[in-house]
Length: 621
Image (cartoon, rainbow, N blue to C red; front, side, top):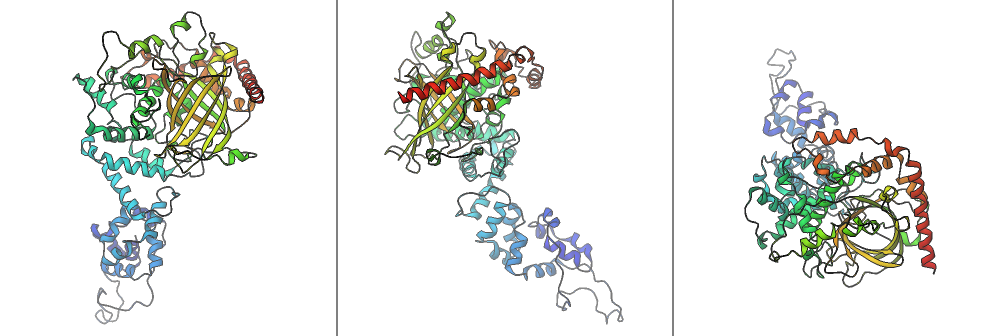
């Protein structure tokens, strides 16, 4: 950059084109547009580096000199004060900055250990982290190593780097920060240069194959496709499974297929893990935790839950309504990635809540009509949970004729599910210090709330008296530093269902909470299943909250999907051409429900208001 500019200002500007490639490798072409040219001091003393004949040699006639060598330009550059060098080099990209020490000894001494220069180059590329004491030079080295690994041609060339890639991606997300705006497809997900950088890396299919598809679930899919016998898990691969599954969870967009064939779908194998009652033990807290005494998150369980929920949301074609959560890589998968809405006032309890509990949340639910429901009983009790037909669930976990070995997974299962969407409005009731089994960095927050299933507005089987329910719960840190949510659903004053989940991305992440639900008495015979919820608004109102969330466009689209017959939704999928699904989305006829929108919207507003009033009366009593 400066060498080129200097050569251009000196006699014989064409000499700049003759710069040796190894000498100009530390220069970034884009920087030429942003930095002013360097002029030479006048008069210029003649030195041994001078070029061309003297005036005496040309008979007193001035003659334009030949092209100057690079050494002269470098002499000018190296003679600049450190402050000027900093102002120049801070515009280099990370790749060029780390090549700069190879140019000459002076640049080597200037760059090595220059944390201010490394910091400024880092901050021109990525987000500003909260931790100001980073080893900026090491961060740049790891950043470039990550890019170099991901540029390798095939998955086989880079899959052995899983440990480094996992640690670096995790660190980049922890260091992410908001750019002061939301992403294009969301009102709640903050934009982040770190997240954009990672999303761009994993556009490459070989990177997803090498690092996101290495858990035991994907191993089973590959084994099934080639039809070898399924064996138990190997302890040597346990850490690798967990690292890859966590990366997949942070990636956020569930990988539903390894190819274009039905036999390579991930969903049936995810179902076999999520609905396996052997996964629900005291040590796992019946949630997405390891079956040991560490309290660590079982990322393979979280991965399976995301695949099950993502598959059902995709089958109902509502993934586009929540594309920021379910279809945007790395969106919201970092702390404080939720963009808060302006508040008129903050209560003392809300002010002491570090998790951002108060507000309105979306909760996805995947109920399946049980035998009793098909006989004429209501479906309402199923719409707060995610589960299979109980006959399928029981037969799967307690098969006739013997069970599978304890160290082997249950067979893949595909019996179909249905999707429901629930609105939850939570508010903080108490904040207390953490207990001995909790992470000590943040307090424990207690909350209560009310919920309402959107689908009940047009569900003929739903009972209007049971469309809403109340809930309570806690949020706390685990010893590992993960955010753990516990919720309990209450019907007519009686606790009935419980859920355990972890918040992907950390405190106040926009990605939300993923976990499992189960009987509040921990019934060994079930039922149990997956659940997830994510924040939609900080608004604490009731009717206004529902009115804001249930816009005509949203309700029209969602209700149209709800009316469609989904008895065999996968039959409409063409595994050879993804464009067909997009055309079906565009061609859906929404007219049958458009005239009912005012009534549905008013019904939603009034019923939530009634639920809130009933909850307040219960608390006063």
